[in-house]
Amino acid sequence: MELLRFTTAGSVDDGKSTLIGRLLFDSKAIFEDQLEQVKGSSERKGLDHIDLSLLTDGLKDEREQGITIDVAYRYFATPKRKFIIADTPGHIQYTRNMVTGASTANVALILVDARKGVIEQTYRHSFLASLLQIPHIIVCVNKMDLVEYAEEAFQKVVEQYEAFASKLAVKDIRFIPISALKGDNVVNRSEKMDWYQGATLLYNLESIHIGSDENHIDTRFAVQTVIRPHTDEYHDFRGYAGRIDGGIIRVGDELQALPSGLKSVVSNIYLGDKAMEEAFAPMSVTITLKDDIDISRGNMLIRLNNQPEKVKEFDAMMCWFNEKPFNPNTKYILRHTTSDAICKIQEVIYKMDISTLTRNNEDKNISMNDIFKAKIRTNIDLFIDPYQRNRKTGSIILIDEATNETVAGGMIS
Image 1 (cartoon, rainbow, N blue to C red):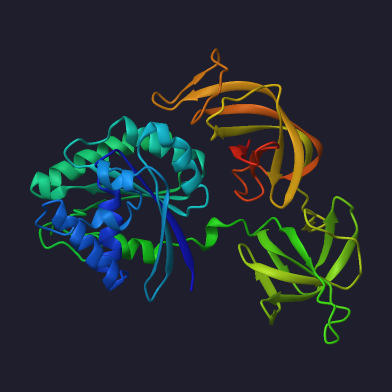
Image 2 (cartoon, rainbow, N blue to C red; image 1 turned 45 degrees about the vertical axis):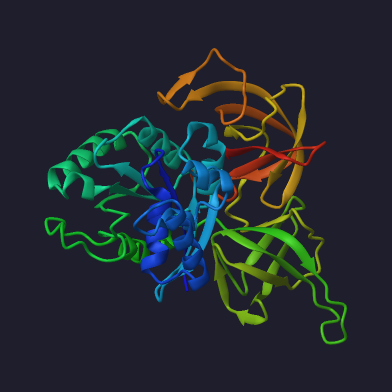
């Protein structure tokens, strides 16, 4: 079954956690003991209905404040697809959490309160979704029950959002009027909005085409580990395990290993213990080659006539995750696919003001949650693609050598 990852974003109290709770509840993806616990919590709060947001707001502080603070990951499945949800916080001080949760998403659900319309947070979350190259955005116009399910309220939000969305680099934007609290158009069609002829949210999530979101042109296979069983049965077996980050690999293909430049031909492809004739992004497989060439973790297999860029210096859009501000004199470990390098941020080119979506060329002080463009230099060659072309080979993280904390994430320009 195909796996779809989606993230939710919206202002505080727009109903993100309630929407996810409704998806889980109406799709029968909740265990009875979970439901009983949520029922008990709802009764203690004096509510006359089940507070479905409690299914995702797992932290004590989140339940007390009624907000999302950390990224909550939830898994559920329907007969058509498997899903991983990243419920991300809406507050500007948790921008780093949203970037983390959205970095692997196929779809972003942007929630808008039907009463308030498109607001500053809507612009900010949509900008981040566009920056992270999430291919599909579904704008959920929530709380339609509070505007008496009026079509005019929905159309007003659509017009506001479309005027702004023309500036975004997003291929597919859809609009759905919903009530997460009442369940209208989430899993089941609403009887109160017969003017809406589109599909429900779950139907969109089950049917949205994500196969072409991956880069199937540029073959990229970053080696994670070399498998040498050393058993009698597999005495001479040498397999290279990793995830295909781009392209299609077939038995008989000639590949080149980077950085060595050595060439060989694919003799076998295994998905677990099952032999395959071909594999494609984003599958995790083991590959064996006809020649016993020197390949180790951090190396990359590519096609001879389709090379990534070889760089030691490049620009990247970064989000600073760490509580300690950026220090221009500090060196960091840079992780790109499965390889590590030592790097230094040579220059902060500009900082984004994500409230106004403008560039600030004067203020170069970087602290937690700041988004900025930087010039980075590494001590070894990296083999990269621009993030816009390949989200896997175009992304990096920076790690503090002393604490091993991830201090920043970035997208190569």
